[in-house]
Amino acid sequence: MKPVTIATLKGMKHAGEKIACLTAYDYSFAALLERAGLDLVMVGDSLGMTMQGHDSTLPVSVAEMIYHTACVARGVKRALLVGDMPFMSYQKNPEQALANAGRLMRRGGAQVVKLEGGAPMAGTVRFLVERGVPVCGHLGLTPQSVHQLGGYRVQGREAADAERIRSDARALEAAGASLLVLEAVPAALAKTITQELSIPTIGIGAGPDCDGQILVLQDMLGIYPRPSPKFSKNFMEGAASIEDAVKNYVAAVKGRAFPGPEHSYT
Image (cartoon, rainbow, N blue to C red):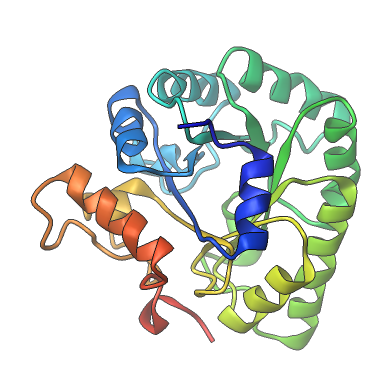
């Protein structure tokens, strides 16, 4: 099968075909996700919590992201590989962002880099894109801003906040972002943003109308030792193997059975 590219995902959006995504942090799981038919695999800075046991993503370093991304890259052949830019690896200035994005792509094998933030980051996104670095944006609940947000809370319920997120989404698209993750926002807001943008949206706790869905692998397998968020689902329940669980997740996303109302916010 042909490798998934940014153009592939954009074509899927316009064809109304859902995009199935999961996180991974090592070679073995990456190869399993590849066999299960994922369209996109993300090496998230969520590894700070799932792999390292921290309470947030903030302690993760660029070197750690490069290491885990390189491990995953060895197991992924078809799926598009997105690597997270960790906390304070891109916020200082666009030149810092370019240097670290280059390391994540050259040494880690990432094909797209993801960074958090809206309009204030649009200049950085444009700087990267103009220099050949594909970018995935991230709006709504942005885990690197957890202390500023006052915890892991739904974003965009108030009218002013919803309009700010919509404006941020348009700004990131205009700056050249190829994809946009929407996390923990009301389903109706995510639907509006998805309809307004020409680039694919990937939801995590953003309702059923995003172009694709992503979950943290450990949450969807039910193996994270702390409580999983409302928007997740344990796909190991009733599955004969981990690979079957992932295949069931892919089928549920593409068949529009996941997420359901119980996994969404109003």
